[in-house]
Image 1 (cartoon, rainbow, N blue to C red):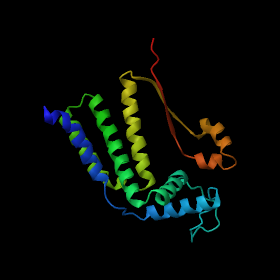
Image 2 (image 1 turned 180 degrees about the vertical axis):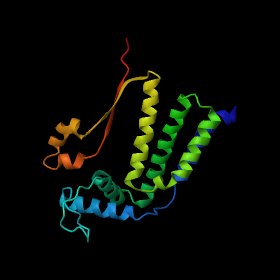
Image 3 (image 1 turned 135 degrees about the vertical axis):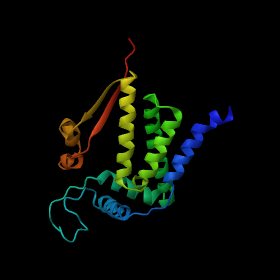
Image 4 (image 1 turned 90 degrees about the horizontal axis):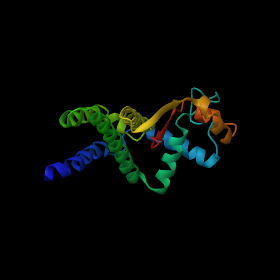
Length: 193
């Protein structure tokens, strides 16, 4: 009985610990630098301010929101808290994957083993980089598809930049560039009949 109650919490702790390690990639520093630049300039760069080989050439910084959030988090929370948040995000991502596998009627043991395998193989995605957000949203999407398949939600829509045109207009002249190649997932709760 005790094992049954604490097994899910223990599993989430293991997933958390898989992502709980110090910052080990160079992407962190370039995103941090771009975030600082945006905070100081109050805009998204149109050219890479740190490029040597492409200096002055047009450039779209697709990770602009991640860079800005990373910089603000680094300044206000510190790097240690960012590592904890990264580990929580990784645990949430793989927790969603686990839930998606469980709703596919995969046995408990197989779901745990498959998630641990995915977490071990995808550990590099648990670095503090924009791909970590991509991992989370991918697992969220798989979970949402399973919820849709089970009838818990009515619709899962993946939209392109074109359907976000109004939002881009609200963001100003740089809005379309900011939202380029940024998909969105929209879900609605099933309406009671």
